[in-house]
Picture (cartoon, rainbow, N blue to C red):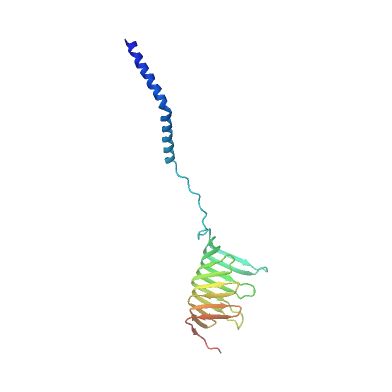
Length: 207
């Protein structure tokens, strides 16, 4: 009796397997599609190609407790720059110096010294912008060219043009004389200082 009952059951099993084998490829394709979708969601998105940005105003190197000197062909000292810290900025090719002390004497010029809380110079060191307690001194060169001293919070020194300028109040000491003004433009080549704004002068009597 068991053998006779098993025959119809076996035929039903084979018939069910045949039907399943017809839909099996479709089921497998669905599973593969589901797996591909899950893998795509789980995979992080690729980073976008970075767009080249212009250089940022950030220093690329530092110097601390430094002194930089340059010399003329005859061996004489042409310029000297000291400071507690210097930072170079590649986007402007400029150098910013804290507690700067500068000595410069271009050919045919009188020795000039400068100091300030912060100084910014260009790449070839032909321009210095002094900020905070700025002082520029041009030493005397004979009786007709007395010592000059410029004091202010913002001074600009152009070594190539032998020029000192300021767009902010400045005090000029010429020998024993003192002059105050709102702006300054001094040219060593002519020995003329153009002072504008509210100008006040204290002149000492000459013998």
